[in-house]
Image 1 (cartoon, one colour):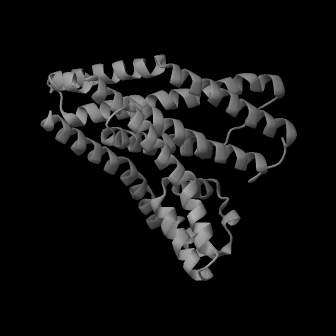
Image 2 (tube, one colour):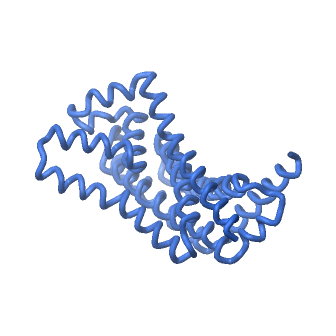
Image 3 (cartoon, one colour):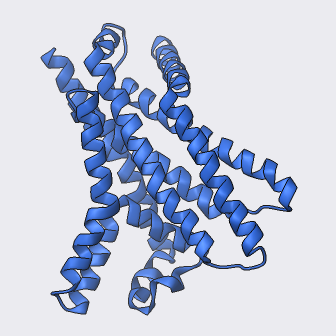
Length: 276
């Protein structure tokens, strides 16, 4: 047990250092610092006294939902696929380490890397805030950012386990990202032009539960108390998720988005190890 824990700790440390040294991660860090500083400063200078769901708040949320999944899926997926392609995964299999330890190690290192980038960007924002007055970042953004990192890191590990090489992983990640962020929304809008309103409402609610991006956007509205922007059509849905039972269901579904992809990745990698 002690050797397994030591091996897992070394793997996490090694993976985390490699990710932070990656030029991709460094470029992502610079991009996030630029985006965070730009939007928060614009919100602070243009509309410092306005509260609620402003255009700046919406821009911040949309960019968060747009950028984090993109980079988490691509970098995380290529990290796992690169291990398999280079033979590093086969080498690790010769050590007394179980598949779930490898999967958890990659997942934990990826999560820590992106949390570090987000915190670094926020640190720069608060440091520059001293020049422009007090800067406030709603805690809902932090919660949603961390949830995005957790969920899409798990999905990234799963996609990496499905890929044959790094290029294949990049292609799969981009397709999944485009599907979740763009194509499903366009599909719902297209269907909405030919079906009655009540059918469209049910489709939208269903899509809300199977698309993690829409799910976390809905979670932000619940956390911030800005559910009025969704309109009265979803009053029953909102009322349920604001109840204790609804909070439990929301938490359980969010955890499933993390656990299920990791289990699938472990099963896939285990089969790959047997084939080798």
